[in-house]
Length: 198
Image (cartoon, rainbow, N blue to C red; front, top):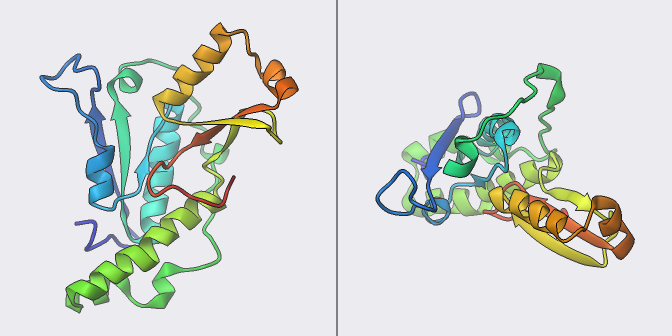
């Protein structure tokens, strides 16, 4: 389905209910590798607010790139409760200057094209478009500590929240992190990793 793509007026968001500790399932589950194998961009929210935000960005990314977009729904996150903002004006969705749909009608090519052209469009047009979307919307960014760090830690999803808790237990506040030149870079889309926002 992802190779066949989506439509610029539609958008697909595939949700994966992962349970790493097998609290409510027979076996532990981790879907990132499945989605990577299917060449679907993966969004990994750290909390309930990001489930909403990344879900909306996931649809927009899907429409822009013509790909399905996956979102990891980790049991620890989805079983939580939180107060979140649903104000419509709090999010903006920027489209990069390049238009992957301009190269050619992706749906027409995929319906009538050959397998090699389908693969080329997926890897040479759509995947870079997903990375461009994340870059334009600055979904990956320094989320804690120094803006010009000497030391950096990269985290995604629930691991980001776990890392912040570990730093707190070590007595490293955000002010202390800035003083020592430490930053935490938070990755929204671990695959395909956007390489230019660092």
